[in-house]
Amino acid sequence: MKHFRKTMGALCAVAAFATAPMTANAQIYAGETAGVGDPVHTMFVAFANQAAGADINIQVNAGQTLTRSMLSGARGEIEFFSSVPSLVGLMANGQRMYETVDDAAEVAGNLRSILGFQAGAYHPVTLSGSGIESWEDISGMTVFTGPPAGSASSTSEALIRIITGLEPGEDYEAVRLSWGEGYAALSDGQIDMMVRPAEVGSANIERFGLSGEFRILSIPEDALANEEMVALFGRPGRGMMQFPGDIYQGQLTEGTITSLGFFQFIGTHAGVDEEVVYQATRAFWEGLDEVHATALFLQNVTPETAFTAVNVPLHPGALRYYEEAGYDIPDALRP
Picture 1 (cartoon, helix red, strand yellow):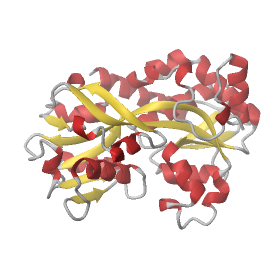
Picture 2 (tube, helix red, strand yellow; picture 1 turned 60 degrees about the vertical axis):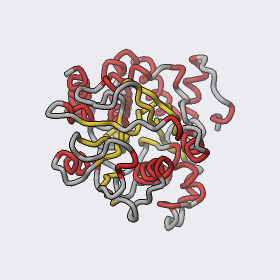
Picture 3 (tube, helix red, strand yellow; picture 1 turned 180 degrees about the vertical axis):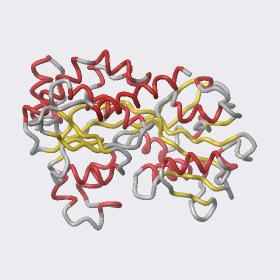
Picture 4 (cartoon, helix red, strand yellow; picture 1 turned 30 degrees about the horizontal axis):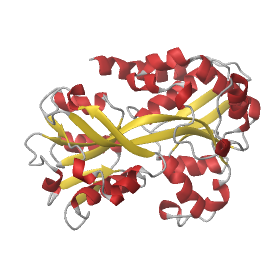
């Protein structure tokens, strides 16, 4: 219920922003983020709500694929967006999902950052009775690995490959759906397992324990020293994370769960007015108590984590705020 109340608080914040009156001459800035219930969405809405207090009005378009949002941001089509550190290099080099995008490498240089945060961990979830109690049991099963166009699916499949050697499409069926469809498919028994990046203590994950029992697979200790696993943990926006299994009601894996952690940052582009980003950044950090009250995982957002996993230069407006506030700014993040 605690997590439910936190989630409802975030949803109410969205509703409040959507219905808040604006002055006739107020400029509205376009923002894109993931779907409701995603920690990335919760953080972005918290940022937008604080910015609104400084008369920086961000219209949040939720449920977006972040690979596309980052490209739209880099092109200057939107002003604010949720950013994925692991996508920065892919865009800059025109690789994978950006391979057929002619201007991807060119516009990648326009990406700018505002602040970073620890978003959560990959949750490999399977319901009791599915027949999956260990990673090896995935063989021959149907696994939802993520949306078709996002980076989460390839990361989930890499995680399974490193631990088990199993290949999608050969040793198990990898299903790519929207996040909402993935939850529904697992609940209805249409798939055997779901790999879902979520905040630790997620109400969306915990709901599987409200009507039954479920299991989160922990990365085996002997897999942690694997060179490929070390490389996966070392990718931009990735890292090892551990949390107690009993944080979720009805969760069957005992003891500490070791998982792949993921980190994100809120981004903008070089063409956004310096004063706009300065005011939004200042409003966020000066309203940190309100941010912490939005969701349990956001209590980990502190001035000490402001540059966590950020791998593009700070926007000059954000940089100005951090300099004035006395933050220790990494040289690599200075434009």
